Length: 135
Image 1 (tube, rainbow, N blue to C red):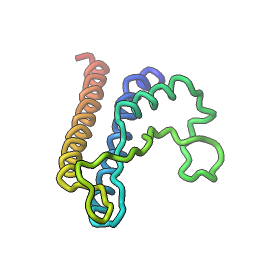
Image 2 (tube, rainbow, N blue to C red; image 1 turned 135 degrees about the vertical axis):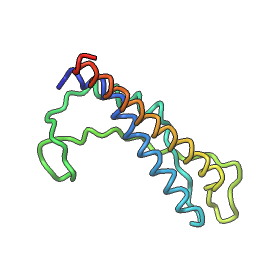
Image 3 (spheres, helix red, strand yellow; image 1 turned 180 degrees about the vertical axis):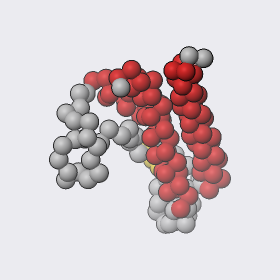
């Protein structure tokens, strides 16, 4: 329903991007001992603005969600961010740029923001439910 599309669009894109951010940080942590591994990150604000802007500018040919690029009849409507290399405070001798304490702090902050986004979405849904019930 188009009426609810605007209400949920921001939260949907934010959740998708926050999920991607958590995955990127998890990959960094998993590769802390991999020689020459370069830590990655995303610019959440830029990616969200881009995702929301793309929704307004592009008209989807189909609302069908495909799970493989070889499938016909639609385009994935998922928000994604460009991966950026992070600038480390200290690079290890083996060329790895992952700093465990920094990544753990980033993960905690990203997880809290993910939970907050879910709570905002739950609040919006609760408000719509109350309106439909006439409360």
